[in-house]
Length: 347
Image (tube, rainbow, N blue to C red):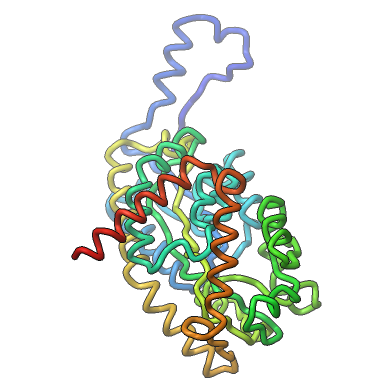
């Protein structure tokens, strides 16, 4: 661990200038010193994301000659994402791989990735994300976090324990929402749905006990956590992309040398590239594997009920602007997306 040798500011002698200078000097990263980073995530042990993070950690250790190491705490052992953020703020964890749900607890700008049916496909979503990255990186910096790379969990779909093909059928089911996100719960409720707020770590229990009948999660996550064995109906319409990010606290970052930070940034970017490249293919495979174990795919896209889903999604999107999603980021994302579509139609 890095020994910062900071002077205890509670003592009266810190008023003396020489000791202040010593403390300031000692707070700088020490050349050759090591730092063991503890990273928390909801991603299950053995999942694709767990593999990406472990590769990143090995790259850190190799590229820094062992000065920076990574220990991963997967599967929610550190608690739900609000718990992880609290523990990061007190220094219990130094880093986290958070979903967009956790990111919205840092800044409401990240709610822009919760707008239903906002993107036509993943390439469109990746393009908008790249264009928004400078501003979002700055926002994270202001809140005390360093962005190492984006994550992607896949397209969110409804998994239900009763067959629900139409909007009306889905509105009859009790749907999981995140505890503490009253804005999103109200958004569901105003749309005629029945939200039930639970911690993410309680989703399986909620399905097993009947507290919830449905949850909206990406297929890979549903397979890893085995949600599909309780909620065996898969509504085949991608609602939103579940984005995420790999973050390090600035408190930890400032204890690492500039040379080693460069290694970490490059490794984080490689992890991001691998995630974006492989998750869409893994997602398709996951749906097929779950189908072989009893998951029933409920067709929606391309059927007579698709227009009803699109209509209610558009209504939701319009209601989110200025309420759930800040107007500035909503309008910026819309402008970038629409420009991309125009250019794609020309090409």
